Length: 486
Length: 118
Image (cartoon, rainbow over all chains, first blue to last red; front, top):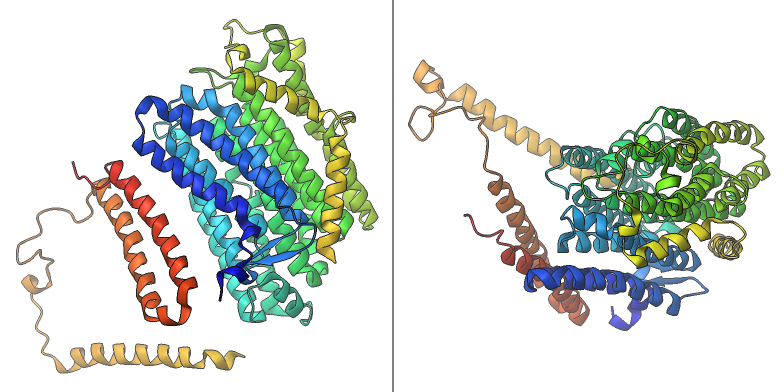
């Protein structure tokens, strides 16, 4: 083994972020109290931007295996890493004043956020079950700690505890599945698993058990019905800045591991897992949309909405061809951007001692803060999938893929539940535009820093579908998936 | 393929048999005259002071977690030291990076005061 054979540049962004996370941890204990916050925060955001630049500079149009088969770099991993870095950076900027007001903006918050980003990027570049698992655990462990960061809040502690116990269970299940796969195929490399699995018959019992456990583990992490119990508690219980972090970029990472593990390595078993995913996807879409109607808490409502969106995302995966995978990828990216915007709005609306997490808080927002209300309107329309917004294109491409795969009967109930879902998104719009403001005037968003408000505006403009980026992203996703398939 | 696991099965059976023999021999061959004093729980010869199910200071957990990290480090270092000749510079650099990461964690916990009891 020689260092020069490693092709270490395939993981340059991960290395940059990991080193800087260590540095920020050291700065936090070495610097005086006052300098810490500004320097630490500035360094964190610039680290993420630097990593994004490293991804762009080191982009790879081909398919490079690095670290002796542990990691892979291709178009999918490049796009996903770029998205993860940029979205995480923006989420941190949105959450800055919220986090600072609650006295949570310490070195640990920033270092954990960075280590979590490293975990996501490792997941994205995994070409090996061990790498995949390490990435997943690194990310999950950081997230448990981030959620519990607000130690005095009973809700945050409860959310972290629930997430930790269920997450540990899911990790155990996934690990068991991996050990079974290893026992059956004799390899941990994803390409090797694919080769070996195609030699099995589809009704081989140990392989079926391994497949079911893989799916259960992945769906747990994704939060799809019937493994969704933790999602609402975690979304509502964690500090909103952490919710913004966990609701956006991780969805992209989740897409990539599902793509690599299920859609590529286990593609020979497509017939078996397609049926399972159809059931899960329809249940998620139905359950998420129906239960979200009953929520009075904004963050819980968005959690159930996320469950239903994960159902749509799975619809793309279960189509089982490159059209479906690229639709799912587009869906994951768009959902991450829109979630980022929604939680950005909540973060800008909330202030000291005011969480802005009740639906009633949004009554008459258009009169007290027209700018924020308009952005919220855009994000809600996008989540509902109304045509001029990107959410519509995401849903359209998923439906095209599902119908193209000959699964019209799956697309029909899914489309019906989109209509049901429109109710609770439009209710927020109704509260903001047609109701009178409540007596206690909430904190104005103009108190937030300028750069963060500017970013939120850009985020809102991105949501309008006539922007050219949507075509660029869709094209990039399609090309990336075609490369992986070959 | 399952044949590969036969040694593990044999090992498990041997372990159970040997453990069983030791317990059965003690039971069958040893004298057995129980009385109340012999069967009662004790702490180093004293009567138990208090209920054993008491609350622990959370600091014990912190110490235990920190201990495990560095304990595992040693578990990695021993096999590494034995094969260092074979893995050469590559293995050496890899371990140095691993140790560096651990040192950063160590410095952090030290500066944060996690090693001080009071």
